[in-house]
Length: 269
Ligand SMILES: [Zn+2]
Image (tube, rainbow, N blue to C red; front, side, top):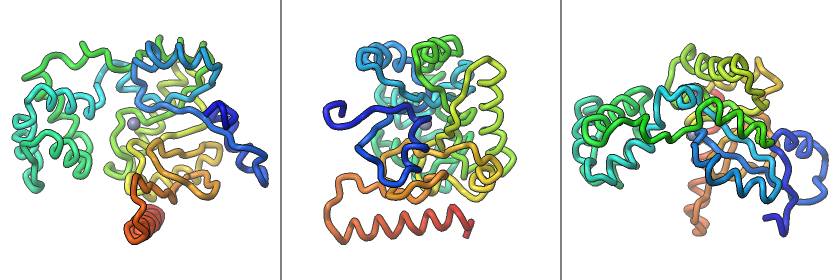
């Protein structure tokens, strides 16, 4: 990328994009979920290339209260305990199909995400069959976040507990954004003006998030998922994530469904 593009810090991007006709290609590096290997693995490389990335962190992870459930479920499945996790999901959310096949179950848990339930099921099964999630030391603690900041990294808000915003009621969704911002501020972490929506598909945000952003005009929203935005938009909602598809008919369907999802996220209907 450095051969063809100019690196910028994420905080510089809005001003650059707002200028009519960007003079050359730029890129900004971001990371989500505050994983510890951003310090142990990524940081030395980042320093070598003199980049200024932004890392989006979650207070509940930084306080070591929780480990991101996708990590726990991946380890549970890898260790052969997928059927036990599937059984727990049937107990908690019997209205959906839960496969004993690990790969399928992993996808189903994303498709039928339900705030708090996925987290509860994976934590329980991990403790019963694998061990103490805290022993993974998967996430950066506060001091480690500050270390990255002292190395020139920007720190962004990824909500307190990584629950999908559109899966929560209004109070909980706004609380998740604001309490995380407060946690960082109270602990002397300078947070960037970016909010990264957990998971980050058009269906993961909704009117509550839109209205909250309307009330906070200095905050930029960002989807830290794959996809393309063709226009500068502070909320960054109309997003085209095309994967490896090249068949025009399939592309057509994907584009239409993403437009529809974006309209739904704005209108709530
Ligand atoms: Zn995330």
